Image 1: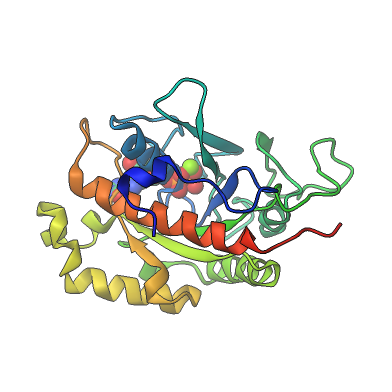
Image 2 (image 1 turned 180 degrees about the horizontal axis):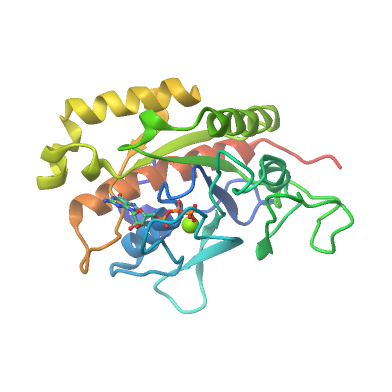
Length: 263
Ligand SMILES: Nc1nc2c(ncn2[C@@H]2O[C@H](COP(=O)(O)OP(=O)(O)OP(=O)(O)O)[C@@H](O)[C@H]2O)c(=O)[nH]1
Ligand SMILES: [Mg+2]
């Protein structure tokens, strides 16, 4: 596994893939944009808010455009060899991002800067549609973001849509994990002291619930608290976020290591 400083030296093993692509998806308001902000903050050592997150609860997704974010390293003009694509949330009715659009993203047909229309999935006539994607265009790790505090009430329709996306990812050989957010909102002990996350029974139950709902093993579920209202870096938040990141990168790297793309 990649250790602290070595995340700086990490390079994908497959030369065909210079940058590993990580996709964040999940229900609206789950904390997807905040997950990217947390990774960015933890790597930079100060709080950043590049992906705009909700300030208030609304009925619609706050993120509408699909955006891919790179993370800059300390040295000038150099970036970590991975990026995050942040998309609109899924909704029980016709208001969220369309499942078919996420599937096209997985396959590499859509790049950054595409504004999804929930009622009209992208077609191959669209100028932004990449007709012949290669291994480097694809998503290399699919990350479901689920909020610990409301996962038990998740709409069945969303679960169904997520399960369709999962099946496509499975067929493409794309590894999948869950980042479980808002642990502070689901256990008062953890809210008081984030370190209790490792022993909290409530958190353990929520992890199990996420595993059952999405069919992802408990070992691939990472409970985190996002940076969302903090003004300074916190060691425990960093440790949880960076642990999830290292695992995601390792899974992504392993999955492309031996693949040669035949077009
Ligand atoms: N308490 C707590 N709040 C969080 C956490 N992560 C995110 N939030 C809050 O949850 C709300 C939604 O977060 P976003 O990051 O905008 O969620 P999103 O999944 O990107 O939402 P859409 O783009 O609308 O689908 C915001 O008000 C965040 O401040 C967390 O770990 N703990
Ligand atoms: Mg968002």
